[in-house]
Image 1 (cartoon, rainbow, N blue to C red):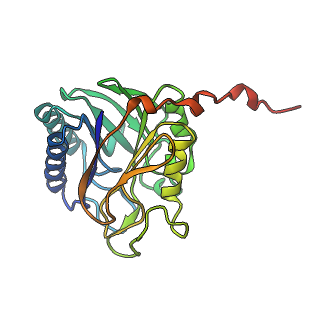
Image 2: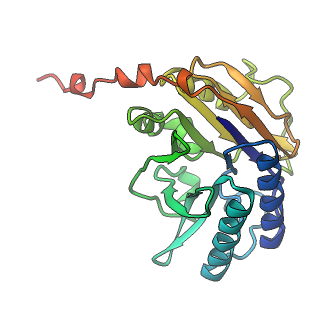
Length: 265
């Protein structure tokens, strides 16, 4: 199963974002990928950071969903589009999943918000599993998987072979560029990616923006916790890799025994 992780630069308009999505979906399909995932809230951008986010309303949401569904059909590829989700007058961070026929299979919301996001978004309440061409997967968005590993285990114990992890760390304005993936002196993000794969015996596919000062790389982690491949920091591109679904046994996740966590009297 070939999967792809799209790493775009921050877009300054909805039209620019849609053009980039179309281009990177086509590139992933050209390399025979069956599914491609985009970073956190790529449409219209994650609020509360050091860049302006374009206006985004229900009309823009509907237009974007229609366009992405069409590109999935045209390119014959499933798409995980992380975007702002407008529902009931509220804004959520979510990942919308389309199959290769352009059918929307569901929406996974971000349910564990970072404290800084609560001024902009409301959390979701449910989790769900997805399946594409025999690939079973879940989605955990940024802060969820970095700080709440149970969001990844939830999918792993239900048979997920991959958990996709749209995230957003870094800045185009300030910071420094890492020089070594998983450096002991670097931030914990990439080390957490390794843990999420190893502790569940599944693939962990983490995808970031191509920021000028990118804190963590777009990375694919193996079920043994190894970094299989990553994109260079700060470079826009599409990471494509062939994964062995049989290697994602979920062994360690399947041994989770919640009945052994009863509080002693």
